[in-house]
Image 1: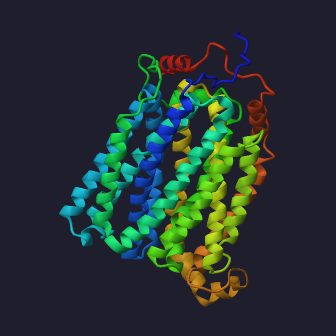
Image 2 (image 1 turned 90 degrees about the vertical axis):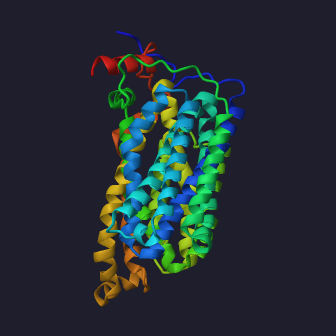
Image 3 (image 1 turned 180 degrees about the vertical axis):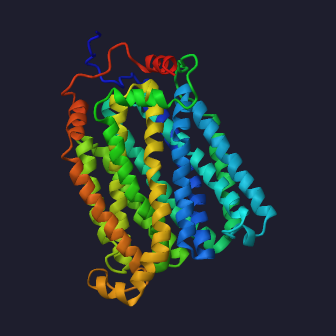
Length: 469
C-alpha cells in the first residue's frame, strides 16, 4: 500500500513571470465579465419594465443559473483537457457568436414579439443571450485554475480576492450603464454595445500568452467526466460537504436573485436604480481588495461560515422597512462579504485538489451549486407574485406583520427576504457543528497527512476514470 505524501495535493511550481501573466488574464476577464453582466442586467431591467412581471424576471434569473448548472461539468472537463488559453478563446468566441445571433433576432422581430411571454421569440431571444452569458463561465473556471498555474500557493487567497474585485467591478459598472442604457437608449443599442465590447475582448485575448504544457488526457476520457470529478473530490475528506454547504447557500441566494431587482425597481426609477446598485457594488470591490491584502486567515472554511451568518442577518434586515437608504446600505454590506465567501471555497480547492483535475472539480462545484438557485427562483417568483405579495398588500397580512415590516407596496418581498435570511443564519450555525467541518479544516491546515498518494495526480485519476467506465 502506498504511503500518503506529505505534499499538498495541488502543489505546482508557477513560472517566474506568473503574476504579470495573471494580471493580463484578469484584465481581459474583467472586460468580458463587465460586458456580459451589462447585457444580462439590461435584459432583466428591460423585461421587468416592459412587463412588470416578477415571474418573468424570476424565470430569466433561474434559467441563467440552470444553464450554468447544466454546462458546469462540460466547462470543467474542457478546461482540464485543453490549455487554459484555448478554453478561454473558445468561450469568448462562442459568447460573441451568441450575442451576434441575438442581435439579428432583434433586428428581424418587433419588440412586441420579443416581450410576449407566451410566444416563442421571447424565449429564443432571452435564451440565446443567457447562453452567451453562461458560456462566459468557462472563462471563470479557467481563471480559477490559472491561480494555481501562475501564483504561488501562499498567495492564492490574495489572488482570489483580486478575482472577487473584478467581479465587483463588473457589477458596479454594468448596473450603472445597464440602467442608463435601457432608460436612455433602449434594448437595440444596448445589444450592439455588448457585441462590440465582446469582440474587443476576444481580439485582445488572441494576443495573450499563458505558459502551460499541454494537458495529458487519458485515452477514452469522456468529455463530461463526472466520474473523474467525483473521484478527485472523494480523495479529500470533507470537500464534498463544503460543496453541499455552498449549494444550500445558493439555494437561499436564489431568493435574492429572483426578487432583488423587482424590489429595487419599486423604490427607484430604472436609471437611478442602476446608479444605486453601482454604488452598493463598490462593496464587492472593497471586499475583494481586503482579501487581496489580508487573505482569509488560517482557516478559510471557518471564515466562510461566519460570514454567511452575517450575510443572513443582513438579508433579513435590509428590507425591514421600505427605505431606499436601508436597502442600499444593506446591499453594500452584503456585497462586501461575497468575495470572501467565494474566495474561501476557491482557496481550499486550489490547495487540496491536484492541478490537473481542478477544472473538473471547479466545474462540478459550479454545476452542483448553480443548480440550487434556479430551484428557488422558479419556486419563489410565482409564490411571491401570486400568494405572498397579495397577502401582504391586503389587510390581513399588513395587520399581522406590519409591526415588524412596516407599510409599503413591497412588503411581500420584504417578508420573503426576512425568512430567507433567518434560514441562512441557522444553516451556517449548524454547519459549524458537523464532523465534515472539523475534518476539512484539519486537512487544510495540514494537521492530517494528504490522502492523495504521491504518484496519484490528475493523469492517474483520468486513467482510473476511463478504465472504470
